[in-house]
Image 1 (cartoon, one colour):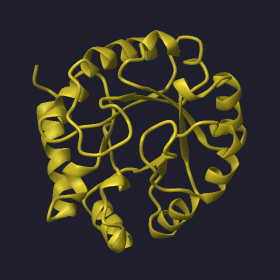
Image 2 (image 1 turned 180 degrees about the vertical axis):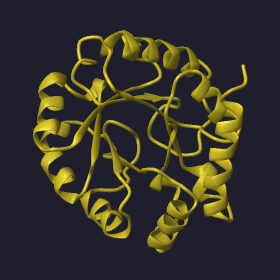
Image 3 (image 1 turned 90 degrees about the vertical axis):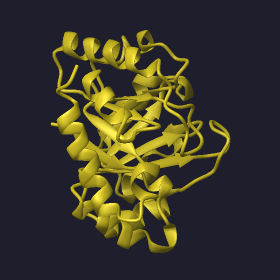
Image 4 (image 1 turned 60 degrees about the horizontal axis):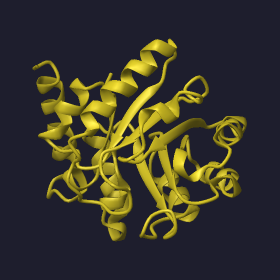
Amino acid sequence: MIYIAPSVLAADFSHLADQLAQAEAGGADWIHLDVMDGQFVPNITIGPFIINAVRQSTKLPLDTHLMIVNPDKHLETFRGAGADYITVHQEACTHLHRTITQIKHLGAKAGVSINPATPCSTLKEIISEVDLILIMSVNPGFGGQTFIEGTLRKLREAKSMIEESGRDIRLEVDGGIDMVTGPRVVRAGADVLVAGTSIFRKPDIKKAVAELRSIIESGAMKK
């Protein structure tokens, strides 16, 4: 199954509840929340208060992506705000195994993300513990960026690692996902697609989600 996770980063926050309802009506599977601290990445976005507001507006799983330094200090807060999946960056965690263990202890699904310049080999020692791997297809920090082509190779490599592990691990991709790149990343192995601009910046959000799913399902079978 392919999961579509609209990214709140691209939403109109003055109409957030309505836009979330439109995305859900269009067939969204998860809601993706990008948390940035202005230190790990050059931008500041949302915190637990917004996540809690989103939690009150939808029953969909909340896929919370922490692009922050020292994520261990905030895991309990984000879980308490309603996060179902909590993903941290390999590059931001000094003791990644400990961080992943803490996320699971809190009752959330644990994910690990890597930036475009970080090789998949860095996931080798943690793949037995995670529920999700997130491959960044842009350099994190801003929405609306262009998809990095080398992501396709990394997705294929990560997919192979997951298959070798024998575990049920979601493979997520984030950055520049639209009608063109969507089918390509699915063919490369991704099963969770984060899409922001290509959904929330469209005049009809419900239609945008439905059309993305349609093009993915039809294009994923093509070689």
